[in-house]
Length: 247
Ligand code: MG
Ligand code: MG
Image (cartoon, rainbow, N blue to C red; front, side, top):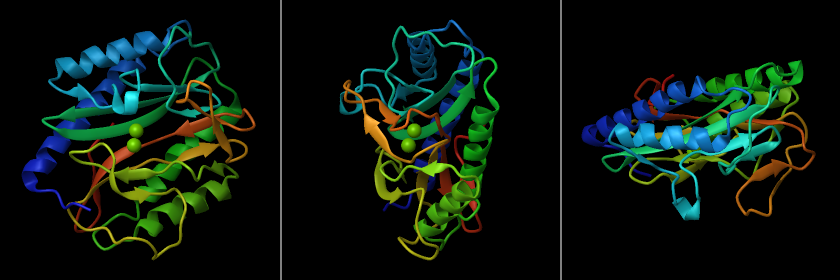
């Protein structure tokens, strides 16, 4: 686990800012009738224009510049000619690298009017993210983050996916340690000031079980119920944390 230097942190602040700006730009286009390929193209162009690179493009062979996961799709959805329809929810995961350092942030958006169940899922997955972040400071344990997210999710009867986790981040998109959305308070690795991590609860309205589609990328819920994903890249500080992908 790396402690970042001030110079590295500055690059990560910039990468994070570009990721947030890309989200903000895309949000305006999330409407019924828009294809996910259009969103991908817009994001790609925007990130490149900011002097950065889309982190996910060709990562492990991923064909898109962003991940777009609709309704029961959890993560890693591939941009396509599929059109958004009223009532969908779409999780957009964006990564950008600036001078070799990455920012990573996912957010789930409503397309038009969604059911109250989906509203509930979005509201509580976002809250679970901030609940997890609230425990971060120099000397905290990875298990403090995971256990608080898990506790929150259980309180609201949402399924916590075990197979997909948050991660350290820096000159590589995925670094050590893993940051699971479950765990035990006071257990796991101890975080130190200067570490940078991505915290990313993925919560389901139904079962926590998932499987992968035939495209070898898209992860979906086993019961076809909707899933939400909220993620921030953060810097661990002496007394707390700084969100690098602040909205
Ligand atoms: Mg991400
Ligand atoms: Mg991530």
